[in-house]
Amino acid sequence: MRVTVLYFAWLRERIGHAQDQVETDAATVTELVDQLRARDDRHALAFADLTAIRVAIDQDLADLDAPITGAREIAFFPPMTGG
Amino acid sequence: MPDIRVQPDPFDYGQVCAAFAQAHCDNGAIVSFCGIVRGENGLQAMEIEHYPGMTERALHRIAEQAMTRWTLGGALILHRHGPLTPGEPIMMVATAARHRADAFAAADFMMDYLKSRAPFWKKERRASGERWVAARDLDEQALSRW
Image: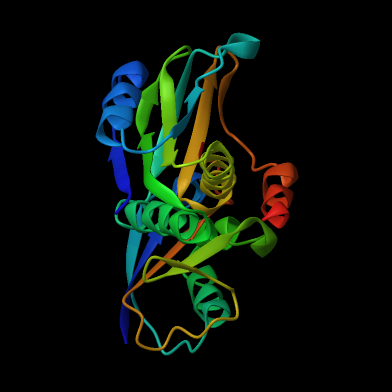
């Protein structure tokens, strides 16, 4: 399946762009992260520490082991700092 | 329906409060809070990034949770994004209720949730350089109160 992967804040800066279009067979977020890490050094560095990363599937917060089957938009970002 | 606004433009806190109070004048209590950019430690500017689409959804959900949990006549969340300078208002919440206990609790709840459940990220700029603000454990722990 094809998903849009979005990056925000320092993840976007480390990767160097705000989104990737990804063709994937990943069943979970973690499997997608493994695939993204293999793209290049910038992605590998950005995803080095998963404890510092949050994920949203189709704009809803999710866990890293959540299934992504049927998802269209997956976003990665640091813990949020609004207010 | 809560009033949710996500905007780059500055806002007049007093004016928004007055309009909110006027629109909910059949309620006996109005509570509001405004967050302002602190100019401490030589802060020159702040940039707020957000996730368009998810931001509005998350803020709606937070306000609707508050309206389910407490007896409210209305709720408003306004949050800015983009560049800001010290002294400028960043965001505000307001609640209207028949009784003040509901209005205070709901405003407090919305603040706690939007700090760590709405997709905003702050970046600070000083003479020494730029850095992303780290999330505080305290903000996450605050959610366990509810």
